[in-house]
Image 1: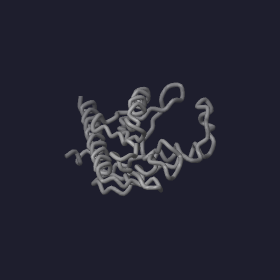
Image 2: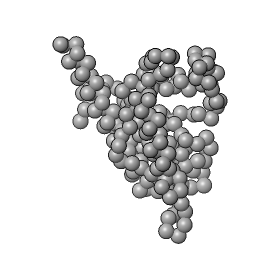
Image 3: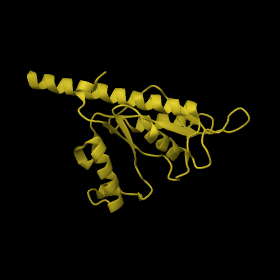
Image 4: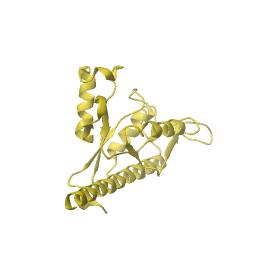
Length: 185
């Protein structure tokens, strides 16, 4: 629908909420990388080597942190912001979470609040909360290796990523149109 505004494939940085390879968080990112969605590729980002850091140390971050930032720079076009902070320029984001009962819903709402300061644009729908409760009425959604085995969750994940792609294209087109108008006036 908006393809004329974008010249290349949208690359999504898949950043897990848990470090364990067998976690549901990592399993969702693995599942996302296997989805075939036109104009979009999900790249898993390894955060296992990231230490705790003091942001006041910039630009002297440890090598693993600098490597992580370089991975994101390739995908996000970070720009400078006053006082050495970074701002995500017209960057979209989507969240999928796992957890008991509400499936990490409270975390999602808090992450949306945190995303206000760096000006991340979160998609509002669909909201995907994956409950990991397993009992007689709730079969497992992940296998013992943390891989997604639930087709309903896979379909929700695909819809979430398609919505992210479409929202990204919409914002890029809006941004390109605004810049063109600014140049013409």
